[in-house]
Image (tube, rainbow, N blue to C red):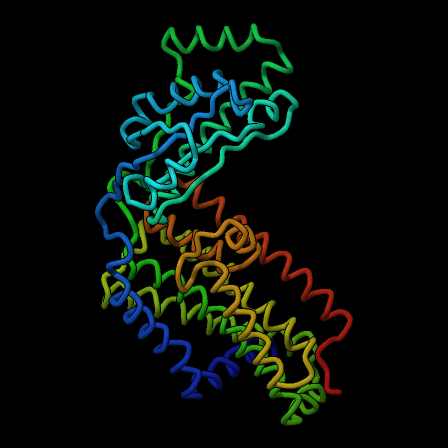
Length: 398
């Protein structure tokens, strides 16, 4: 008996369990259909996403009151009057914060920007300078406004840093080069992450999200299988055979890995045939992403199985981890909160979802590879942790 005998037996045993087939193969297809249909109006279609014009109020603080700088005001005026930015924003100037807030409340503005009193002082002291946002009612327009004016502060901080380190002569040389035809530092291109004219639909988004989530659930079958051998006292019989514990352990992991890959193949093909989900033109990158998710699923199942003391606690733990990672990564609905988005970068679901979406949008290969590499880094960390735990605890009957 070798690893492949145990692997095939494990796969056949799992596929005979109706609840496993229902939860891993049928349930994700139903969820993709329900979520994709119900939320289709809240996401883009295959048409190009063109942002609306944002009505922005800029609060200029007078230098006489000690609150601002004419230099900053002039730079900000120059920024919003550049052709690229002027296409996306409609600017109104204000002298007090109260006027801008009133316009926001009466729906005359979508977004407002105020220059803090210490803006230029922070720049001169080498600190990071930020504008203050006053958000309106539309989250999408708020995000667009924040993105545009964050670009202004980034460019301002960069130029002031160059001036402080290299001297004003460098800035003068850069300005003359810009005027002679070089790239304008204030030019901004707002495009989709993929090719122009594409955006993912709700069905595509939830197909990618549910695929990542339910592939991780294969790790729960791994955990249950490892506990089952010990609970049923069959692990003693296996250990009595002329094979090592490592062979038994590897065979069960290989069987559940094949199950996860079979599950991924089924979901991808069925969503393509039944729901018309376009998975992009990079099948080998899809395979590589699924391999990484499978590795993460197996290592997560191993970690939980070797740490927990019972099947019930292991199942509850791994379900909680998977649901939490899916929620944080925006698998149920995108969460436009900076802290949550930063936290999601430590999850398997985030990088898996971004990898699939980049492929669906036919993004540049460099973007796809980057997300897959980051997914591989997360998998490597999980593999290292599971290896340490296995060396300490092992897989044996206690």
